Each structure stands twice: as C-alpha cells, then as structure tokens.
Length: 168
Image (cartoon, rainbow, N blue to C red):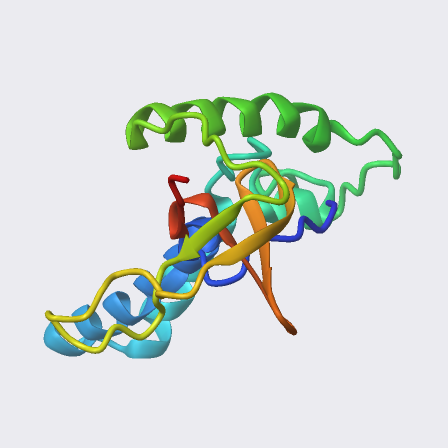
C-alpha cells in the first residue's frame, strides 16, 4: 500500500475510511436488543475482516495473513512476494473515480495559476453573510482538483469546489 496525500478539509477524500463509524450503530443495536456488546463487536469486526475491500478486491484478513480464512491453520503457504492486490487496485481505483465523477456530475474547472479567486468561508457568520471571503486570493499551485491559494503570508489548500473564479 502507498500513502496518498489528500486535500485538507475535504471529508469526501476520507469517506471510505470513515464508514467504520457503523461500529457505534452495532453497539446501539446490541444495547437495544439486550445482547452482549463484546460479542456484537467481535462479530462485526470479524465480518469486516472477511469482507473484500472495494479497492483491492481482497479481504483484509487475507492481505494480512497471506492465507484464506477457510484454510486450516496448520497449512501455512510458502511466502511469496507477488503483489496481487496492487494490480487490481489501479483498475478498481479508476473505476471508483469514474463512478464518483458521474454520480457527482463533476466538470472540468478553469482555474489557472496566478489568477485571483475567492475562497469559501469556513465559518459563515449567518444567513446574511456571504458564502465566500471578500478579499481575493491568488492561485499558487494546482494539482488535479487540489488547489493552493495564497494571500500575503497565508496559504490555503482546498478542493476546487471551495473556490470561485473572479470575473475581470
């Protein structure tokens, strides 16, 4: 696995990781049905480890132990250095990106380095305040949908949906 840097303050980048919050749902259901909480958590985590990951197509337990869960524990396979999940990972990641783009109706942005933009206000003051900050920022760097803008001494990096181009 290779670490991929993400855009700050863009929760959709961590969407798949944050889906593990269903653990709290499992606990609430166990309490409501008067079941043992520890066994409910154990069953949930076991199911999570046996479910194939959407990107790699391989279950987490199989990635960690290099053996299928249905195999006997006494039969250890020889260690092989064949990286099967990353080969599947590229095609699956491309498929997921294409699907997400269609689902969100994305379109190509027209931001350029050196142009002035407005940045969406992180803390809006209320319903009478503007959605974007009033002072313009200058774009310094663009990497796909991740845009870096600068104003005097402050630099921000956000997704392109957090910016608005200034018409001049």
